[in-house]
Length: 520
Image (cartoon, rainbow, N blue to C red; front, side, top):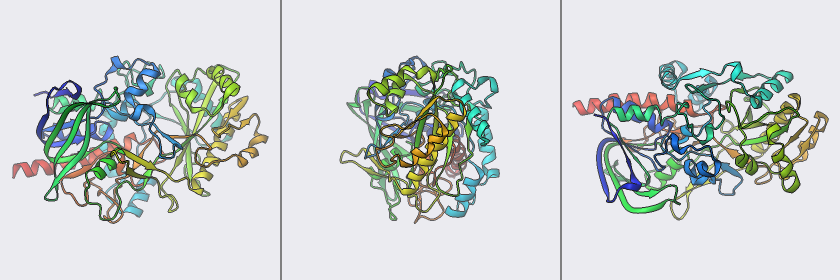
C-alpha cells in the first residue's frame, strides 16, 4: 500500500504515530535509509522540519526560494559570523539545492579512515555495490564537453594553461535544461534529488512522510530510544508554531538531520556522551571565492553550475589542501558574497555578466592541528557552531586564493577581486605577492560553507567517536546517525555521494538485522 505525505502545518490536533523505524530528516541520508528500509517491509516514518516544496515552488526568484529552502533563511553562520553556512531545509534536504556534483569517496580518504579511525570495513570494494546502486537510481553521468558553460570553461582553460590536474565532473541529472538555477531547486524535476527519486520510492513502499515538524528531543528509557518528540510549525513564517505536537514511537530511530542539526538534536536529548564527542570535529570545507572579470561574456547564472574541477592541490604536503571548482553567480547571491563596497561594489555588479568565479575549497580535518568546529546549544536549544581559524587554515586560505587568482588570470581575466575585507584587486601575475600581506583572520576574509560534515563522527573506538562503521550509536543500540555528521574528516570532494553510499550500506545491513528480529 502506498504511503502518504502529511503536512504538519495543516494538522489541527496532536498526532501520535507508531512504526518500526522513525527517521529524522529527509535529505541524502534520511531518504536513502527510508527507501531501503521501506522496501525491506519495515514500517517507516520520515520527519522533515522543512516544507513539502515541489517544483511549482521553485520560482527561480532568489528572494522567494532562499528563505523557503535553506536553514535559517540562508542566514545560518558560525557563532562569530565568519563563515556563512549554506544548508538545505526542505523535503529532500540539501539534495534539492545542491549543484548535483557526484563524487565517490576518494580511496585515500577511506585509507586514512581505516588507518586512523579503525574503519576497516569501509573499503572501495565494500562500498562499490552501494555507490553503483545509487548512481544508477540517480542518473549519474559525466558532463560532456558541450555542457561546459563559459564560467566552468574558464576554470578548465586556466588549469590547463598552468599544467594543473583537471577533470570533468559527474552529476545526478536526467534531461537537464541547463538553466543554471540548481541552487534554487529544479523547476523541471531534472535534478535527481531525493525529492523526486528516493522519497517517492519510499512512499511507494508504504512509508509515511511528515513535513513542517521541528524535532525537539529523543525520549530515552532503559538505554534505548523509545520515542521522537516534536511540534508542528510554519517553516516559511518564521517557524511560527501551530500549537500541536507530534510523538512517534518506534523500535529503531535514525537521526539524519545533517551535520550541525543531528548533533544538536542528540545534545538536546541529553543522550549519553561519556567521552564528550558529540558536536566535536565538525568540518566545513571552508570556501574562499575569487572573481575574475573578463572581456568576453560569461553569463555565470546560466548553464550547468559545476562541470569541471581542479584537484591539483588537494593533498598539499606544505599545508591544508584545497580543490577548485566554479560556481553559478546570481545577482542576490553575488551581491552578498563579494566584499567590495560603494562604487567598487556597483562596478562589480555591473560586470556580473562578464564575471567567472573560482572557489578554493579547503580540506579540513586530516592534520592533528585541525580540530574542526564544535556544535553546542544556545539557550533556546538551537545549534551553535564555533569554528577555529587556526594558523593552518589561514595558510590554506592564502594559498587557495592565490591559486584561484593565478587560474583566473591564466584564463584571460583582466582583473581578479579577492574575498578579503577590503578586496585586493590583481591585474597581472607579478602582483600576486601582494596577497601575502592580505589578512585571513575571522571576518577579514569572506568565507562560506556548502559542505557540512562531522559532529557525530564514526570510528571503532567509542572514546573517539559517536557511531561505529554501521552508523549505530556506541551506547544506544537502537539509535543510528545516517548523514554527513558521521564523517570523521572532510573529504576533498563534494559529499553527497559519500553519504548516499555509506547510508545505503548501513541501511541494507540494518534491514537484514531488523527483519531477523521481527521473524524471531
